[in-house]
Length: 590
Image 1: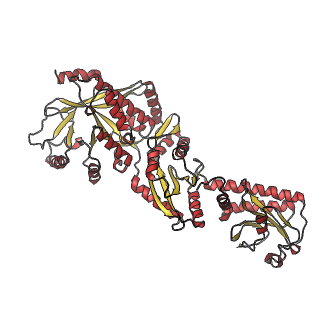
Image 2: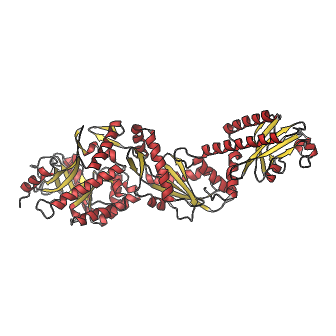
Protein backbone atom coordinates (compact mmCIF):
# COMPACT_ATOMS: atom_id res chain seq x y z
CA UNK A 1 0.00 0.00 0.00
CA UNK A 2 1.04 3.59 -0.45
CA UNK A 3 2.88 5.11 2.47
CA UNK A 4 4.26 8.48 3.38
CA UNK A 5 7.47 9.29 1.48
CA UNK A 6 9.33 9.65 4.78
CA UNK A 7 8.42 6.20 6.02
CA UNK A 8 11.95 4.70 5.93
CA UNK A 9 10.96 1.23 7.04
CA UNK A 10 8.41 1.02 4.26
CA UNK A 11 10.87 2.20 1.62
CA UNK A 12 13.52 -0.24 2.85
CA UNK A 13 11.22 -3.25 2.67
CA UNK A 14 9.66 -2.13 -0.60
CA UNK A 15 12.95 -1.53 -2.39
CA UNK A 16 14.51 -4.79 -1.28
CA UNK A 17 11.57 -6.50 -2.98
CA UNK A 18 13.38 -5.59 -6.21
CA UNK A 19 15.82 -8.42 -5.38
CA UNK A 20 14.10 -10.47 -2.68
CA UNK A 21 12.17 -12.70 -5.07
CA UNK A 22 13.76 -14.81 -7.79
CA UNK A 23 13.20 -13.65 -11.35
CA UNK A 24 14.94 -15.58 -14.11
CA UNK A 25 14.74 -12.83 -16.72
CA UNK A 26 16.01 -10.17 -14.33
CA UNK A 27 18.82 -12.35 -12.99
CA UNK A 28 20.09 -13.11 -16.50
CA UNK A 29 20.52 -9.37 -17.07
CA UNK A 30 22.29 -9.03 -13.70
CA UNK A 31 24.81 -11.70 -14.78
CA UNK A 32 25.69 -9.54 -17.78
CA UNK A 33 26.35 -6.62 -15.42
CA UNK A 34 28.61 -8.88 -13.34
CA UNK A 35 30.60 -10.05 -16.37
CA UNK A 36 31.04 -6.41 -17.41
CA UNK A 37 32.25 -5.49 -13.90
CA UNK A 38 34.91 -8.22 -13.98
CA UNK A 39 36.08 -7.12 -17.41
CA UNK A 40 36.27 -3.43 -16.45
CA UNK A 41 38.44 -3.90 -13.34
CA UNK A 42 40.19 -7.18 -14.21
CA UNK A 43 38.79 -9.24 -11.32
CA UNK A 44 37.95 -12.93 -11.63
CA UNK A 45 34.54 -13.31 -9.89
CA UNK A 46 31.50 -11.27 -8.85
CA UNK A 47 28.02 -11.62 -7.39
CA UNK A 48 24.93 -9.58 -6.39
CA UNK A 49 23.20 -10.34 -3.10
CA UNK A 50 20.39 -9.02 -0.92
CA UNK A 51 20.58 -8.91 2.87
CA UNK A 52 17.54 -8.73 5.13
CA UNK A 53 17.17 -9.02 8.88
CA UNK A 54 18.16 -12.69 9.06
CA UNK A 55 19.12 -13.97 5.60
CA UNK A 56 21.75 -13.38 2.91
CA UNK A 57 20.51 -14.35 -0.57
CA UNK A 58 22.62 -14.49 -3.73
CA UNK A 59 20.63 -13.33 -6.75
CA UNK A 60 23.26 -13.58 -9.51
CA UNK A 61 26.89 -14.72 -9.69
CA UNK A 62 29.74 -14.88 -12.22
CA UNK A 63 32.78 -17.21 -11.95
CA UNK A 64 32.02 -18.04 -8.30
CA UNK A 65 29.63 -20.51 -6.68
CA UNK A 66 27.89 -19.26 -3.54
CA UNK A 67 24.79 -20.35 -1.67
CA UNK A 68 22.41 -18.45 0.60
CA UNK A 69 23.54 -18.04 4.21
CA UNK A 70 22.49 -16.35 7.42
CA UNK A 71 23.04 -12.63 7.85
CA UNK A 72 25.86 -13.23 10.36
CA UNK A 73 27.82 -15.34 7.85
CA UNK A 74 27.44 -12.84 4.98
CA UNK A 75 30.60 -11.14 3.71
CA UNK A 76 28.53 -8.14 2.59
CA UNK A 77 27.09 -7.59 6.08
CA UNK A 78 29.88 -5.05 6.67
CA UNK A 79 28.95 -3.21 3.45
CA UNK A 80 25.34 -2.77 4.56
CA UNK A 81 26.25 -1.83 8.13
CA UNK A 82 28.86 0.74 7.03
CA UNK A 83 26.70 2.02 4.14
CA UNK A 84 29.87 2.37 2.03
CA UNK A 85 32.21 0.47 -0.27
CA UNK A 86 34.34 -2.07 1.61
CA UNK A 87 37.75 -3.13 0.18
CA UNK A 88 39.74 -6.10 1.54
CA UNK A 89 42.92 -6.53 -0.62
CA UNK A 90 43.88 -9.64 1.39
CA UNK A 91 41.10 -11.19 3.44
CA UNK A 92 43.58 -13.30 5.48
CA UNK A 93 45.00 -10.04 6.86
CA UNK A 94 41.62 -8.39 7.48
CA UNK A 95 40.25 -9.13 10.99
CA UNK A 96 36.65 -8.86 9.69
CA UNK A 97 37.17 -11.80 7.31
CA UNK A 98 40.28 -13.73 8.40
CA UNK A 99 38.37 -16.61 10.02
CA UNK A 100 35.31 -16.61 7.75
CA UNK A 101 34.39 -20.06 6.29
CA UNK A 102 34.47 -18.69 2.72
CA UNK A 103 38.04 -17.52 3.32
CA UNK A 104 39.55 -20.57 5.01
CA UNK A 105 37.50 -23.07 2.97
CA UNK A 106 36.19 -23.24 -0.61
CA UNK A 107 35.93 -21.08 -2.59
CA UNK A 108 38.97 -19.61 -0.73
CA UNK A 109 38.24 -15.93 -1.27
CA UNK A 110 41.45 -13.88 -0.77
CA UNK A 111 40.28 -10.61 -2.31
CA UNK A 112 36.92 -8.94 -1.67
CA UNK A 113 35.26 -5.64 -2.66
CA UNK A 114 31.63 -4.87 -1.87
CA UNK A 115 29.64 -1.73 -2.74
CA UNK A 116 26.03 -0.99 -1.77
CA UNK A 117 23.25 -0.87 -4.36
CA UNK A 118 21.59 2.29 -3.08
CA UNK A 119 18.51 3.98 -4.52
CA UNK A 120 17.59 7.69 -4.63
CA UNK A 121 15.97 7.45 -1.16
CA UNK A 122 19.26 6.23 0.31
CA UNK A 123 17.85 2.75 0.87
CA UNK A 124 20.09 -0.25 0.16
CA UNK A 125 18.60 -2.80 -2.22
CA UNK A 126 21.56 -5.18 -2.03
CA UNK A 127 25.29 -5.35 -2.72
CA UNK A 128 27.55 -5.70 -5.75
CA UNK A 129 30.65 -7.73 -4.78
CA UNK A 130 33.94 -8.63 -6.51
CA UNK A 131 36.08 -11.62 -5.46
CA UNK A 132 39.29 -13.38 -6.40
CA UNK A 133 41.33 -16.29 -5.09
CA UNK A 134 44.52 -14.24 -4.84
CA UNK A 135 45.25 -10.95 -3.03
CA UNK A 136 44.99 -7.83 -5.20
CA UNK A 137 45.31 -4.08 -5.01
CA UNK A 138 42.31 -1.93 -5.87
CA UNK A 139 42.84 1.65 -7.06
CA UNK A 140 40.63 4.68 -6.46
CA UNK A 141 39.77 4.71 -10.18
CA UNK A 142 38.63 1.09 -10.01
CA UNK A 143 36.55 1.96 -6.95
CA UNK A 144 34.82 4.76 -8.90
CA UNK A 145 34.16 2.42 -11.82
CA UNK A 146 32.51 -0.22 -9.65
CA UNK A 147 30.41 2.38 -7.78
CA UNK A 148 29.24 3.86 -11.10
CA UNK A 149 28.32 0.40 -12.31
CA UNK A 150 26.37 -0.16 -9.07
CA UNK A 151 24.34 2.96 -9.93
CA UNK A 152 23.48 1.47 -13.32
CA UNK A 153 22.40 -1.78 -11.67
CA UNK A 154 20.09 0.15 -9.31
CA UNK A 155 18.56 2.07 -12.23
CA UNK A 156 17.91 -1.21 -14.02
CA UNK A 157 16.35 -2.82 -10.93
CA UNK A 158 14.00 0.10 -10.34
CA UNK A 159 12.92 0.14 -13.98
CA UNK A 160 12.39 -3.63 -13.90
CA UNK A 161 10.46 -3.38 -10.64
CA UNK A 162 8.25 -0.58 -11.94
CA UNK A 163 7.51 -2.43 -15.17
CA UNK A 164 6.54 -5.54 -13.22
CA UNK A 165 4.27 -3.81 -10.70
CA UNK A 166 2.78 -0.91 -12.66
CA UNK A 167 -0.09 -1.25 -15.13
CA UNK A 168 1.24 0.61 -18.18
CA UNK A 169 -2.00 2.23 -19.41
CA UNK A 170 -3.41 3.57 -16.13
CA UNK A 171 -0.05 4.06 -14.40
CA UNK A 172 -1.53 2.45 -11.28
CA UNK A 173 -0.13 -0.40 -9.22
CA UNK A 174 -1.20 -3.70 -10.77
CA UNK A 175 -2.57 -6.98 -9.42
CA UNK A 176 0.90 -8.40 -8.69
CA UNK A 177 1.64 -5.32 -6.62
CA UNK A 178 -1.55 -5.90 -4.64
CA UNK A 179 -0.41 -9.45 -3.90
CA UNK A 180 3.03 -8.21 -2.84
CA UNK A 181 1.54 -5.52 -0.59
CA UNK A 182 -0.64 -8.09 1.17
CA UNK A 183 2.39 -10.37 1.55
CA UNK A 184 4.35 -7.42 2.93
CA UNK A 185 1.69 -6.91 5.61
CA UNK A 186 1.96 -10.60 6.48
CA UNK A 187 5.77 -10.42 6.82
CA UNK A 188 5.33 -7.53 9.24
CA UNK A 189 2.99 -9.77 11.32
CA UNK A 190 0.23 -7.23 10.75
CA UNK A 191 -2.93 -8.50 12.47
CA UNK A 192 -5.13 -5.48 11.75
CA UNK A 193 -8.39 -6.17 9.92
CA UNK A 194 -7.99 -4.97 6.33
CA UNK A 195 -10.56 -4.21 3.64
CA UNK A 196 -10.35 -4.77 -0.10
CA UNK A 197 -12.92 -2.88 -2.19
CA UNK A 198 -13.35 -3.94 -5.83
CA UNK A 199 -14.66 -1.42 -8.34
CA UNK A 200 -16.20 -2.06 -11.76
CA UNK A 201 -17.03 1.25 -13.39
CA UNK A 202 -16.83 0.57 -17.12
CA UNK A 203 -19.22 -1.40 -19.31
CA UNK A 204 -16.35 -3.30 -20.94
CA UNK A 205 -18.50 -4.91 -23.65
CA UNK A 206 -19.51 -1.42 -24.70
CA UNK A 207 -15.95 -0.11 -24.43
CA UNK A 208 -14.56 -2.93 -26.58
CA UNK A 209 -17.25 -2.32 -29.19
CA UNK A 210 -16.17 1.30 -29.33
CA UNK A 211 -12.47 0.41 -29.50
CA UNK A 212 -12.98 -1.92 -32.45
CA UNK A 213 -14.24 1.01 -34.49
CA UNK A 214 -12.32 3.93 -33.02
CA UNK A 215 -9.12 1.98 -32.32
CA UNK A 216 -7.40 0.89 -29.13
CA UNK A 217 -6.30 4.47 -28.52
CA UNK A 218 -9.88 5.34 -27.59
CA UNK A 219 -10.05 2.51 -25.05
CA UNK A 220 -6.68 3.50 -23.58
CA UNK A 221 -7.84 7.12 -23.37
CA UNK A 222 -10.94 5.94 -21.51
CA UNK A 223 -8.92 3.85 -19.04
CA UNK A 224 -6.46 6.69 -18.40
CA UNK A 225 -9.29 9.13 -17.73
CA UNK A 226 -11.01 6.64 -15.42
CA UNK A 227 -7.76 6.21 -13.47
CA UNK A 228 -7.48 9.99 -13.08
CA UNK A 229 -11.11 10.27 -11.98
CA UNK A 230 -10.66 7.50 -9.40
CA UNK A 231 -7.69 9.31 -7.86
CA UNK A 232 -9.54 12.63 -7.80
CA UNK A 233 -12.84 11.26 -6.47
CA UNK A 234 -11.50 8.75 -3.95
CA UNK A 235 -8.34 10.62 -2.88
CA UNK A 236 -6.59 7.64 -1.20
CA UNK A 237 -5.06 8.59 2.14
CA UNK A 238 -1.73 7.52 3.58
CA UNK A 239 -1.79 3.74 3.88
CA UNK A 240 -4.26 3.34 0.98
CA UNK A 241 -3.62 2.62 -2.69
CA UNK A 242 -5.68 2.11 -5.84
CA UNK A 243 -4.81 -0.86 -8.04
CA UNK A 244 -5.70 -1.88 -11.58
CA UNK A 245 -6.82 -5.50 -11.20
CA UNK A 246 -7.95 -6.09 -14.80
CA UNK A 247 -9.09 -3.99 -17.73
CA UNK A 248 -11.82 -1.76 -16.34
CA UNK A 249 -11.63 -3.29 -12.85
CA UNK A 250 -9.94 -1.54 -9.93
CA UNK A 251 -9.37 -2.11 -6.22
CA UNK A 252 -8.53 -0.09 -3.13
CA UNK A 253 -6.80 -1.59 -0.07
CA UNK A 254 -7.42 0.04 3.29
CA UNK A 255 -8.11 -0.67 6.95
CA UNK A 256 -11.48 -2.14 7.89
CA UNK A 257 -12.30 0.82 10.13
CA UNK A 258 -11.73 3.27 7.26
CA UNK A 259 -14.63 5.30 5.88
CA UNK A 260 -13.75 3.82 2.49
CA UNK A 261 -16.35 1.13 1.77
CA UNK A 262 -18.12 -0.29 -1.27
CA UNK A 263 -21.14 1.93 -0.66
CA UNK A 264 -19.01 5.05 -0.14
CA UNK A 265 -17.04 4.41 -3.34
CA UNK A 266 -20.22 3.91 -5.38
CA UNK A 267 -21.64 7.15 -4.02
CA UNK A 268 -18.44 9.04 -4.84
CA UNK A 269 -18.42 7.73 -8.43
CA UNK A 270 -22.12 8.23 -9.11
CA UNK A 271 -23.04 10.17 -12.24
CA UNK A 272 -19.58 10.83 -13.70
CA UNK A 273 -18.33 10.36 -17.25
CA UNK A 274 -14.92 9.47 -18.66
CA UNK A 275 -13.38 10.82 -21.85
CA UNK A 276 -12.72 8.52 -24.82
CA UNK A 277 -11.32 11.18 -27.13
CA UNK A 278 -12.85 12.52 -30.35
CA UNK A 279 -15.47 14.31 -28.28
CA UNK A 280 -17.00 11.06 -26.97
CA UNK A 281 -17.53 10.25 -23.32
CA UNK A 282 -18.84 7.19 -21.50
CA UNK A 283 -20.97 7.11 -18.38
CA UNK A 284 -19.39 5.19 -15.52
CA UNK A 285 -21.76 2.44 -14.41
CA UNK A 286 -20.20 1.76 -11.02
CA UNK A 287 -20.58 -1.55 -9.22
CA UNK A 288 -18.65 -2.26 -6.02
CA UNK A 289 -18.11 -5.01 -3.46
CA UNK A 290 -15.86 -5.47 -0.43
CA UNK A 291 -14.38 -8.11 1.85
CA UNK A 292 -12.50 -7.82 5.14
CA UNK A 293 -9.49 -10.02 5.92
CA UNK A 294 -6.33 -10.34 8.01
CA UNK A 295 -3.04 -10.53 6.10
CA UNK A 296 -1.22 -13.77 6.82
CA UNK A 297 -4.40 -15.74 7.49
CA UNK A 298 -5.39 -15.88 3.81
CA UNK A 299 -3.30 -16.12 0.65
CA UNK A 300 -3.42 -12.88 -1.39
CA UNK A 301 -4.87 -14.74 -4.38
CA UNK A 302 -7.71 -16.03 -2.18
CA UNK A 303 -8.39 -12.52 -0.89
CA UNK A 304 -8.87 -11.30 -4.46
CA UNK A 305 -10.90 -14.37 -5.43
CA UNK A 306 -13.34 -13.77 -2.57
CA UNK A 307 -13.66 -10.11 -3.54
CA UNK A 308 -14.31 -10.99 -7.19
CA UNK A 309 -17.00 -13.49 -6.16
CA UNK A 310 -18.64 -10.81 -4.01
CA UNK A 311 -18.56 -8.39 -6.95
CA UNK A 312 -20.04 -10.94 -9.34
CA UNK A 313 -22.90 -11.59 -6.92
CA UNK A 314 -23.68 -7.89 -6.90
CA UNK A 315 -23.22 -7.11 -10.59
CA UNK A 316 -24.63 -10.26 -12.16
CA UNK A 317 -23.66 -11.50 -15.62
CA UNK A 318 -22.64 -8.94 -18.18
CA UNK A 319 -24.73 -8.40 -21.28
CA UNK A 320 -23.13 -7.62 -24.60
CA UNK A 321 -24.48 -4.58 -26.39
CA UNK A 322 -26.34 -5.24 -29.60
CA UNK A 323 -29.06 -3.60 -31.61
CA UNK A 324 -32.12 -5.42 -32.91
CA UNK A 325 -32.45 -4.84 -36.63
CA UNK A 326 -35.37 -6.51 -38.40
CA UNK A 327 -35.19 -10.23 -37.69
CA UNK A 328 -31.47 -10.25 -36.97
CA UNK A 329 -28.90 -8.77 -34.62
CA UNK A 330 -26.45 -6.12 -35.71
CA UNK A 331 -23.21 -5.65 -33.84
CA UNK A 332 -23.05 -1.99 -32.81
CA UNK A 333 -19.45 -1.54 -33.70
CA UNK A 334 -19.07 -0.56 -37.37
CA UNK A 335 -17.21 2.61 -38.33
CA UNK A 336 -20.42 3.92 -39.91
CA UNK A 337 -22.17 3.63 -36.55
CA UNK A 338 -19.65 5.83 -34.84
CA UNK A 339 -19.66 8.33 -37.66
CA UNK A 340 -23.37 8.46 -36.92
CA UNK A 341 -22.58 9.10 -33.25
CA UNK A 342 -20.42 12.08 -34.17
CA UNK A 343 -23.18 13.39 -36.43
CA UNK A 344 -25.67 12.96 -33.60
CA UNK A 345 -23.45 14.90 -31.21
CA UNK A 346 -23.25 17.69 -33.79
CA UNK A 347 -27.04 17.65 -34.31
CA UNK A 348 -27.66 17.98 -30.57
CA UNK A 349 -25.08 20.73 -30.24
CA UNK A 350 -26.63 22.71 -33.11
CA UNK A 351 -30.22 21.64 -32.30
CA UNK A 352 -30.76 20.73 -35.94
CA UNK A 353 -32.39 17.73 -37.59
CA UNK A 354 -33.91 16.10 -34.49
CA UNK A 355 -37.66 16.24 -33.94
CA UNK A 356 -40.44 14.35 -32.17
CA UNK A 357 -43.33 12.34 -33.51
CA UNK A 358 -46.18 11.17 -31.30
CA UNK A 359 -47.92 7.81 -31.54
CA UNK A 360 -51.49 7.98 -30.21
CA UNK A 361 -52.76 5.20 -27.96
CA UNK A 362 -56.41 4.61 -28.85
CA UNK A 363 -58.79 2.74 -26.55
CA UNK A 364 -60.76 0.07 -28.40
CA UNK A 365 -63.74 0.47 -26.07
CA UNK A 366 -64.29 4.16 -26.73
CA UNK A 367 -62.32 4.70 -29.92
CA UNK A 368 -60.75 7.80 -28.41
CA UNK A 369 -57.07 8.59 -27.94
CA UNK A 370 -56.07 8.43 -24.28
CA UNK A 371 -52.34 9.00 -24.45
CA UNK A 372 -49.34 9.66 -26.64
CA UNK A 373 -45.91 8.11 -26.89
CA UNK A 374 -43.10 10.47 -27.87
CA UNK A 375 -40.60 9.04 -30.34
CA UNK A 376 -37.43 10.67 -31.61
CA UNK A 377 -36.81 11.07 -35.33
CA UNK A 378 -33.78 12.48 -37.09
CA UNK A 379 -33.59 14.07 -40.49
CA UNK A 380 -30.00 13.14 -41.30
CA UNK A 381 -28.40 15.25 -44.06
CA UNK A 382 -26.98 12.17 -45.85
CA UNK A 383 -29.07 9.21 -44.65
CA UNK A 384 -32.48 10.81 -44.72
CA UNK A 385 -35.18 10.08 -42.13
CA UNK A 386 -33.96 7.87 -39.28
CA UNK A 387 -36.12 6.24 -36.62
CA UNK A 388 -34.87 6.20 -33.03
CA UNK A 389 -33.90 2.52 -33.24
CA UNK A 390 -31.21 3.43 -35.77
CA UNK A 391 -29.23 5.70 -33.47
CA UNK A 392 -30.41 5.93 -29.84
CA UNK A 393 -28.89 2.58 -28.82
CA UNK A 394 -25.48 3.75 -30.08
CA UNK A 395 -25.52 6.59 -27.56
CA UNK A 396 -26.41 4.41 -24.56
CA UNK A 397 -23.74 4.53 -21.86
CA UNK A 398 -22.16 7.72 -23.17
CA UNK A 399 -22.72 11.35 -22.26
CA UNK A 400 -24.33 11.64 -25.66
CA UNK A 401 -27.10 9.36 -24.41
CA UNK A 402 -27.68 11.62 -21.41
CA UNK A 403 -27.81 14.68 -23.67
CA UNK A 404 -30.29 12.94 -25.96
CA UNK A 405 -32.52 12.05 -22.99
CA UNK A 406 -32.44 15.68 -21.83
CA UNK A 407 -33.45 16.80 -25.33
CA UNK A 408 -36.34 14.30 -25.34
CA UNK A 409 -37.60 15.48 -21.95
CA UNK A 410 -37.33 19.18 -22.76
CA UNK A 411 -39.05 18.76 -26.14
CA UNK A 412 -41.88 16.73 -24.61
CA UNK A 413 -42.42 19.20 -21.78
CA UNK A 414 -42.47 22.02 -24.35
CA UNK A 415 -45.47 20.36 -26.03
CA UNK A 416 -47.24 19.75 -22.74
CA UNK A 417 -46.65 23.35 -21.70
CA UNK A 418 -47.95 24.68 -25.03
CA UNK A 419 -51.20 22.74 -24.66
CA UNK A 420 -51.66 23.27 -20.93
CA UNK A 421 -55.43 23.21 -20.10
CA UNK A 422 -56.25 22.63 -23.79
CA UNK A 423 -58.96 20.05 -24.68
CA UNK A 424 -56.51 18.04 -26.80
CA UNK A 425 -53.94 17.76 -24.01
CA UNK A 426 -53.03 14.11 -23.34
CA UNK A 427 -50.42 12.41 -21.11
CA UNK A 428 -47.19 11.66 -22.97
CA UNK A 429 -45.00 8.60 -22.45
CA UNK A 430 -41.25 8.97 -22.90
CA UNK A 431 -38.70 6.13 -23.03
CA UNK A 432 -35.91 6.38 -20.45
CA UNK A 433 -32.93 4.04 -20.27
CA UNK A 434 -32.22 2.43 -16.91
CA UNK A 435 -28.84 4.21 -16.87
CA UNK A 436 -30.61 7.57 -16.71
CA UNK A 437 -32.39 6.74 -13.47
CA UNK A 438 -29.15 5.74 -11.74
CA UNK A 439 -28.51 9.47 -11.39
CA UNK A 440 -29.97 10.22 -7.96
CA UNK A 441 -30.86 13.74 -9.02
CA UNK A 442 -32.76 12.58 -12.12
CA UNK A 443 -36.19 12.35 -10.48
CA UNK A 444 -35.78 15.65 -8.66
CA UNK A 445 -34.63 17.47 -11.81
CA UNK A 446 -37.52 16.00 -13.79
CA UNK A 447 -40.07 17.03 -11.17
CA UNK A 448 -38.53 20.51 -11.05
CA UNK A 449 -38.93 20.89 -14.83
CA UNK A 450 -42.59 19.88 -14.62
CA UNK A 451 -43.16 22.32 -11.75
CA UNK A 452 -41.45 25.14 -13.63
CA UNK A 453 -43.78 24.48 -16.58
CA UNK A 454 -46.75 24.42 -14.12
CA UNK A 455 -47.63 20.89 -15.24
CA UNK A 456 -48.79 17.99 -13.05
CA UNK A 457 -46.36 15.06 -13.04
CA UNK A 458 -49.24 12.80 -14.10
CA UNK A 459 -48.94 14.24 -17.61
CA UNK A 460 -45.53 12.62 -18.10
CA UNK A 461 -45.32 8.81 -18.06
CA UNK A 462 -41.89 7.14 -17.77
CA UNK A 463 -41.28 3.95 -19.75
CA UNK A 464 -38.16 2.10 -18.58
CA UNK A 465 -36.19 0.36 -21.33
CA UNK A 466 -33.09 -1.88 -21.23
CA UNK A 467 -33.90 -3.18 -17.77
CA UNK A 468 -32.34 -6.66 -17.73
CA UNK A 469 -30.27 -6.06 -14.57
CA UNK A 470 -31.97 -3.06 -13.03
CA UNK A 471 -33.04 -5.05 -9.97
CA UNK A 472 -29.36 -5.76 -9.22
CA UNK A 473 -28.38 -2.08 -9.34
CA UNK A 474 -28.91 -0.30 -5.98
CA UNK A 475 -28.52 3.12 -7.59
CA UNK A 476 -31.08 2.31 -10.29
CA UNK A 477 -33.54 0.94 -7.73
CA UNK A 478 -33.13 4.09 -5.66
CA UNK A 479 -33.72 6.18 -8.79
CA UNK A 480 -36.97 4.31 -9.49
CA UNK A 481 -38.11 4.82 -5.93
CA UNK A 482 -37.38 8.55 -6.20
CA UNK A 483 -39.48 8.76 -9.38
CA UNK A 484 -42.32 7.01 -7.58
CA UNK A 485 -42.08 9.37 -4.62
CA UNK A 486 -42.22 12.35 -6.96
CA UNK A 487 -45.52 11.00 -8.29
CA UNK A 488 -44.45 9.84 -11.75
CA UNK A 489 -46.18 6.89 -13.38
CA UNK A 490 -43.80 4.25 -14.72
CA UNK A 491 -44.40 1.51 -17.26
CA UNK A 492 -42.49 -1.62 -18.17
CA UNK A 493 -43.06 -3.83 -21.17
CA UNK A 494 -42.93 -7.57 -21.79
CA UNK A 495 -43.10 -8.81 -18.22
CA UNK A 496 -44.45 -12.29 -18.91
CA UNK A 497 -41.07 -13.96 -19.45
CA UNK A 498 -40.49 -16.14 -16.45
CA UNK A 499 -39.44 -15.98 -12.82
CA UNK A 500 -36.87 -13.21 -13.26
CA UNK A 501 -39.62 -10.84 -14.43
CA UNK A 502 -41.73 -11.77 -11.41
CA UNK A 503 -38.68 -10.82 -9.34
CA UNK A 504 -38.81 -7.37 -10.96
CA UNK A 505 -42.44 -7.00 -9.95
CA UNK A 506 -41.69 -8.01 -6.36
CA UNK A 507 -38.63 -5.81 -6.17
CA UNK A 508 -39.99 -2.60 -7.65
CA UNK A 509 -43.55 -2.87 -9.03
CA UNK A 510 -44.36 -0.38 -11.80
CA UNK A 511 -47.71 1.37 -12.10
CA UNK A 512 -48.62 0.11 -15.56
CA UNK A 513 -47.83 -3.16 -17.33
CA UNK A 514 -47.92 -3.31 -21.13
CA UNK A 515 -48.70 -6.76 -22.46
CA UNK A 516 -46.57 -8.07 -25.30
CA UNK A 517 -48.34 -7.16 -28.55
CA UNK A 518 -47.80 -10.70 -29.90
CA UNK A 519 -50.08 -12.01 -27.17
CA UNK A 520 -52.43 -9.04 -27.28
CA UNK A 521 -53.04 -9.42 -31.02
CA UNK A 522 -54.28 -12.99 -30.51
CA UNK A 523 -56.54 -12.45 -27.49
CA UNK A 524 -59.68 -12.62 -29.65
CA UNK A 525 -58.56 -15.20 -32.18
CA UNK A 526 -56.82 -17.78 -30.01
CA UNK A 527 -58.28 -19.46 -26.93
CA UNK A 528 -54.80 -20.27 -25.58
CA UNK A 529 -53.86 -16.60 -25.71
CA UNK A 530 -57.07 -15.71 -23.87
CA UNK A 531 -56.29 -18.24 -21.13
CA UNK A 532 -52.74 -16.90 -20.75
CA UNK A 533 -54.00 -13.33 -20.72
CA UNK A 534 -56.66 -14.22 -18.13
CA UNK A 535 -54.00 -15.64 -15.78
CA UNK A 536 -51.73 -12.63 -16.28
CA UNK A 537 -54.54 -10.14 -15.70
CA UNK A 538 -55.72 -11.94 -12.57
CA UNK A 539 -52.20 -11.96 -11.09
CA UNK A 540 -51.51 -8.33 -11.92
CA UNK A 541 -54.88 -7.15 -10.60
CA UNK A 542 -53.89 -8.68 -7.26
CA UNK A 543 -50.89 -6.32 -7.34
CA UNK A 544 -53.15 -3.32 -8.10
CA UNK A 545 -51.53 -2.79 -11.49
CA UNK A 546 -53.11 -1.31 -14.60
CA UNK A 547 -52.77 -3.62 -17.61
CA UNK A 548 -52.47 -2.19 -21.11
CA UNK A 549 -52.80 -4.71 -23.92
CA UNK A 550 -51.38 -3.00 -26.97
CA UNK A 551 -52.52 -4.24 -30.35
CA UNK A 552 -51.88 -3.60 -34.01
CA UNK A 553 -55.45 -4.67 -34.86
CA UNK A 554 -57.89 -2.23 -36.48
CA UNK A 555 -60.17 -0.15 -34.30
CA UNK A 556 -63.29 -2.02 -35.41
CA UNK A 557 -62.40 -4.84 -33.02
CA UNK A 558 -63.84 -4.42 -29.54
CA UNK A 559 -63.33 -6.34 -26.36
CA UNK A 560 -65.99 -8.47 -24.76
CA UNK A 561 -67.81 -7.29 -21.69
CA UNK A 562 -66.35 -10.04 -19.51
CA UNK A 563 -62.72 -9.22 -20.29
CA UNK A 564 -61.53 -9.14 -16.68
CA UNK A 565 -61.64 -5.32 -16.64
CA UNK A 566 -58.67 -5.11 -18.98
CA UNK A 567 -57.86 -2.16 -21.16
CA UNK A 568 -57.00 -2.96 -24.76
CA UNK A 569 -55.39 -0.32 -26.91
CA UNK A 570 -54.16 -0.11 -30.43
CA UNK A 571 -51.53 2.19 -31.90
CA UNK A 572 -51.82 4.18 -35.06
CA UNK A 573 -48.92 5.56 -37.01
CA UNK A 574 -46.80 8.27 -35.33
CA UNK A 575 -47.48 11.84 -36.38
CA UNK A 576 -45.63 15.12 -36.19
CA UNK A 577 -47.17 17.87 -34.08
CA UNK A 578 -48.52 19.66 -37.14
CA UNK A 579 -50.35 16.47 -38.15
CA UNK A 580 -51.29 15.42 -34.64
CA UNK A 581 -53.06 18.53 -33.35
CA UNK A 582 -55.75 18.63 -36.08
CA UNK A 583 -56.31 14.88 -35.70
CA UNK A 584 -56.77 15.24 -31.93
CA UNK A 585 -59.23 18.11 -32.42
CA UNK A 586 -61.22 15.82 -34.69
CA UNK A 587 -61.10 12.87 -32.25
CA UNK A 588 -61.64 15.00 -29.14
CA UNK A 589 -64.14 17.68 -30.16
CA UNK A 590 -64.84 20.40 -27.63
